[in-house]
Length: 439
Image (cartoon, rainbow, N blue to C red; front, side):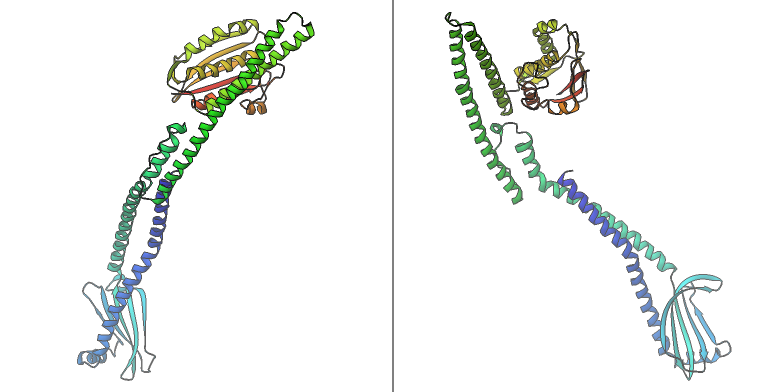
């Protein structure tokens, strides 16, 4: 997952957690604010009521309420009420209590926030209840909650979009560094040392370090190429000289048969050494990207040509060699290397096949690649052997001639061309090589 996506997800999660906390805490906070406002209003009404106890109207109310011991006053909409009740002729402790209770007023039930105040007046005790309806308050609280939640969600969405744009702006130099200086670089010679401007010192430092690293790698590559050229000259030249001398010696009629056999054996050893050196040099050149990949290669034509070159070996082992290709794909690469890749695979299919066996070359066109199948009925391999066949100097059968470098060369050429190879093999039944050429 990209860093940009991770940062965006992290910001969204933190904001949603904050939103969740607010959703849980906000109702209680709104409720407390509302109750605090109602309590203040009820206390103001209680204070005004107590301050007017000496007024004539209040005294008349108290004297008139002796019969019922209760006096009630309600607003027209029943959203407020005042209730004064006589408790007795003994003094009581003065106290104020807020409660939420349902009350039925004129056959209509509603929830009220009630201030219950007990006091003493004229040597008698009374309870004053002043109530305020909670119906409208609940509706108002619900509206506040919905509005706040919608506002917070909008803020989360807007900040997410702003963060995404800002993170994308900050990481743009990083992605340019990845794309231009890492992903597209197959050869140090093609590395672009031009500095990439960034607003972040971290990315500037990364770009500088990459430039320095690639300069060192380029220097090492030049040394390695020079070493390969030196090896090619210093080793192959003496081998050629020795071979010429042995060939001249073998023409000497004074040599006996035993000496001739030793010279012939030495010539075979020199040929083997020359092949090993050439193969190792080839692998090294491939891995050092010393080949161009600009040629258009007709795979069907190439395979047909190779089958003709291998016809003698096929006939010798009485192998049924069939080519069933339904697609004529043009692949961009290095013709010499692709020729070596397919030749080595077909050569192995012949070498490790049984007398009277068969080889089938077929194909399949996939969405993003062209798959070439090379199927043989040879000796096959065990699962452990399949894992090591592309390693250098790995030999499957020591009875057969070879240096164990053929499939190592195949693997190097495949990596060089971004070709993937899969192998399925059953010991004693045969092997299938699947070569996926990218389109």
